[in-house]
Image (cartoon, rainbow, N blue to C red; front, side, top):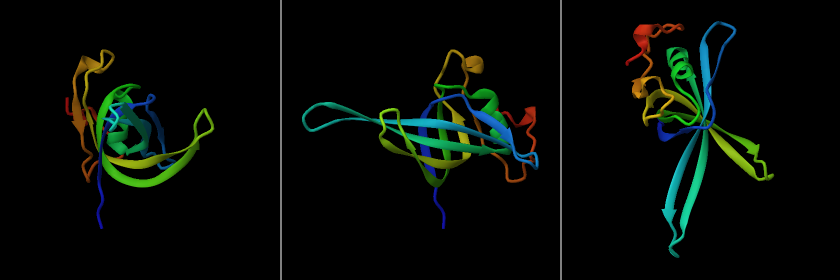
Length: 137
């Protein structure tokens, strides 16, 4: 079986990178995916769905280095689990857990390095530590 999800959204906070006990880099960040539509009565409707993205190895290091809160990205990955949480108003919510396979930096932010966009897809043979040569831009 195979499943894949493609998301375009904005980071809700700066990424957090850590290392597993065996030294493998892992970065997590929250991604807000917004959907807007006009209802039958002409009212604009908005809905935000939150995803918790996890990136590993070289992809983790690249995301940690170049992504910041508010940056727009495209993420391709696999859905893992839903994580329940409670918002400030006491409403029950869920955040979907996604393991990223590809992260493409889109959207231009003034605080982004060079304001450029780029993409990083981990190689199956990638080592646990990335290098400057892994960065595609």
